Length: 321
Image (cartoon, rainbow, N blue to C red; front, side, top):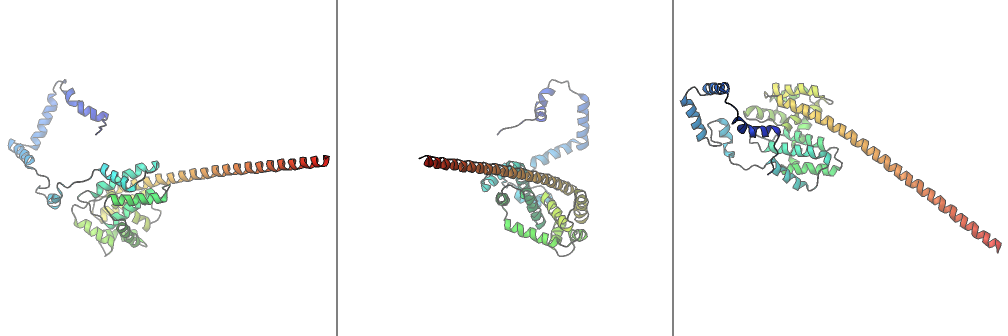
């Protein structure tokens, strides 16, 4: 395994050997002693803490979290590298260089989300994942390969693509004709819609996990409800929907909203550039074809002229005889 050491990591690795040749700083040690005294007022407290550490067993802590997820202790989880290797094997072809970074990032991000013990898939999340994949692959040079990338991702995370698309469609169909206020009410758990059910489940779960694609799913709902929504407007709406309506922290959701619109803007620029390149290439091809056609016409004219000269010369020879 190769290890790339940055300047910071090298400094940390070399720190002990450097400290060995530096006089001790009594002020620093006195500060450390004060911190330890604040944490452990007596020797008994320190010993009790060490005993707890020594007796620690993964998944067996006396907490609600451990009681809920302790049974997953020891479960084998693929690394990001293994997940990407599996994705690549399923895809079976190289990824366009312009898209390799974005695809690698979304494969790694999706893997880390889905292997988290707290992760629970819901229709809003499904809509978000498919929206993100559509955003990345919509201008892929080979449209059929773009769809294959989406399918390979679904298989690599062990999910059925048809099920995800069906779940996403339910949410997007529900959002048609709704207002921001109606969506906010649903995210409070009001009503009997699929979004209301998702919100109620999230509110009832103290360990509910927000993830990026849940946020993207809400942004897609926002785009359906209010077409043309800009980044600044989306930030405020995410605060309302996730924070006020769902009662969850909205900081990460707002950050993901900004990231989505920044990525969308970059991909829009890329789309324009690719179209410009395509137009230039078509123009050059047309110019080359035109040049070939002109050359063929000129050659045909020369051949016709030469043939006429040969016929005329033959006629002159006949007359001379």
